[in-house]
Image 1 (cartoon, rainbow, N blue to C red):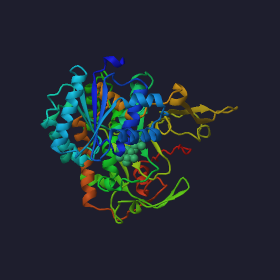
Image 2 (image 1 turned 180 degrees about the horizontal axis):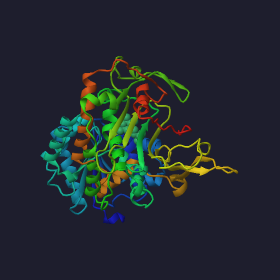
Image 3 (image 1 turned 120 degrees about the vertical axis):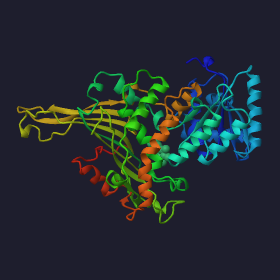
Amino acid sequence: MNRSTLSPTILVIFGAAGDLSWRMLIPALYCLSTEGCLPEKFAIIGIDRKEMTKEEFQSHLRAGVESFCRLKIDDASWSTFTTFLAQYHSGDLSHPDTFGVLAKAIDELRQQWGGTADPVFYLATSPTLIEPIAMGLGKVGLGKNTPGSRIVVEKPFGRDLASAQALNRSLGEVFAEKQIFRIDHYLGKETVQNILALRFGNAWFEPIWDRRYIDYVQITVAETIGVEQRGGYYEHAGALRDMVQNHLLQLLCIVAMEPPVSFAAEEVRNKKTDVLHAIRPFPTEMVHQLAVRGQYGAGWVHGKHVPAYRSEPDVSTDSLTETFVALKVFVDNWRWQDVPFYLRTGKRMPQRVSQVVISLRPVPHQAFPANAVDQWHPNRMILNIQPQESILLNFQAKRPGPTIRLTPVDLHFSYPDAFKSESPEAYETLLRDIIHGDSTLFMRADQVEAAWSLVEPILQVWESNPPTDFPNYSAGSWGPEAAQVLIARDGKSWFESPEDEE
Ligand code: BG6
């Protein structure tokens, strides 16, 4: 896209001195600037409580780019980028004065630029500030009535259905739905978007992408890290809220959605929302059979001894927060009736791996003698989202030799090998889309609420039946025994990538 055709944009970052801004947003904006993807008229206004001069702000951000950006910083590109780092204001993020100062700063820039400037408000703040900031913006007329105005909110979006609905109502008083960009950073990952390309850009897969050929689907998002320095937040969230309500359900939607008629934002979002509506609700009395929770104890990850969750900073020594979840989910529609989707996510797993495994039904008739197929296993497609960025198509081949012996082999597509270029980080994609005003990869109000409705019965059952066995898995293992039982009951097992992928 030609930079001069992009609308002049003012990106206001609330929480500009914080971690998200330092590690993710500014490094992503630096990449966009270096690759010529920002509008010609572009300014970043940072706001935070911390007292800093503009120069201190800039040198703090430079250290973040040096540490976290995928591009190596160079002085010329940094100096171009600093021309965008227009202002830093320190102040209380929800105080009326802050919004007065901001409205004036936006107005001045707009005048300098000949009358137009789209203000984009990025809330890189604690969720408790979403409402007060939105209200503050509304009071100074920077919401619905300001052309081009947008607000960007991070997860967690609410902590249950009622709080998400309340937040949607409050935001809706100030901004129209099309002005609200709710982030789920998984949707910005190249490999996640590639699932759409794989399914809908090829004739190979879609004809078999349904209950007639697919036996089951597994979605795993495993992390080797623990809760790190985020104990304060995580204690009130847990893996169900932190990962399942958003990232895992979004992956499920992309795998299970119907083909869209076009890639227009509303069309894609409608098709994904249809999946959420089709997921069979968890009956309260079935939660213990369909959902497993776990919390890590001390253990070994990559040869290093790591502490139990309960010994992490800001975590209660008798915490009941789950760090692992496994679920069995059904999508009640013509395409997926009775096909189980097994979802699992956990911290302190032995491997960092996000992947979708599509396992096909057996061939209808096995014509080969039993000794020819002794290594037989179902055909599988493995969509590796990270850290490997690849797709494996696993099928049977004849082992060379005088007799027929079938052995599973892989067709392998690797992103880096095929394209010889580095993928942009999720935040680059998302920020570019926000600046271009494209909301396809963002969560609509009804999607967020539908996802909360699904996890709500689990939250309620778990809250009213506190776990008695925590910690119930060792760091460095694949979660509690019950997660193996969940899938073994159906005669299946979790797919484990053969080698360590990190
Ligand atoms: C975030 C969660 O949304 O996603 C974190 O809050 C988690 O707990 C992170 O670690 C995982 O993201 P990624 O991109 O590293 O897989």
